[in-house]
Amino acid sequence: MPADPLITLENAHQRLGLLPTLGGSAAFWEVRRDERWCPIWRPYAPNPERRTVANFPLLPWSNRLFGGGIHVDGEFYPMVSNRVDSPVPMHGTGWMHAWEVAAHSATHVEMVVEAHEPCGYPFHFSARQHYRLEDEVMHMRLELTHLGPQRRPYGLGFHPYILRAAGLQLRFGAQGHWPGEKGVPVPDSAPLPPEWDFNVLRDIGDGEIDHNFHGCDGHMRMERPDIDLRLDWQTTEPQGLDTAILYRPAHGQWFCYEPVTHITGAHARPGMPGLRLLEQGQSMALEVRQTLSRITP
Image (cartoon, rainbow, N blue to C red):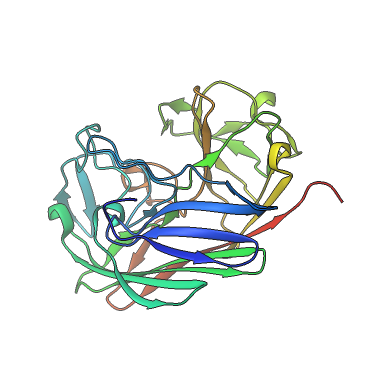
């Protein structure tokens, strides 16, 4: 049993565990197969040295932030690292906050948080997370509202750790990617190498991928024959979101398919592509619908 309070949502087909005070993270997501619960995401494991969760929210930006801070309207705001294992600020601060439970039922939870200059960063925002189970569909939604008097650039994302197994196949639409090392993209994108082209359902393969992909269609399909599971992912908001990150570590235990509203390092790129400059009171959202089914008829 985790030390942080655990909320469990459950219906006849699936169950989902959430840890509001641990960054609003997910502890597990499982599908029912006969009398067994089979994990879809990497389950939470208490670890004082490294956080191991199933999914967590990315806000007020996704992934790494370069340049020592951000430039907004002629002003520079310095920002130091928020993680001991990273020289730069990483994954925003949503995972660092204790979220409050605003609503809770057997199949739905709403978590909220307000952050004023977290880690000394120049952001003041409120955020909400919704998780809802509906038959064989799991909905997750992340909302953010800017509260500060001066506009700021914001981005959102989800970071699920999807378990791998022998025979796992993956499909997601993409037109190209940004080459780079350790998730740090170069300025210009490039066509997909054949071994990274998942426009048709195929074996997920081996070796590390940690890259941003563009021209995405908002759909992802994953199939795991070991538990007769087909997972269909659809990013429903914002419409036309065409950026995603695929992180396939070399160890082969899990992978991450991350819908994100902006490319890694967007704050340091001209025009801050994908980031939204929100005025006080303006909001943005990211919503995903995941449908579970069987591979066999």
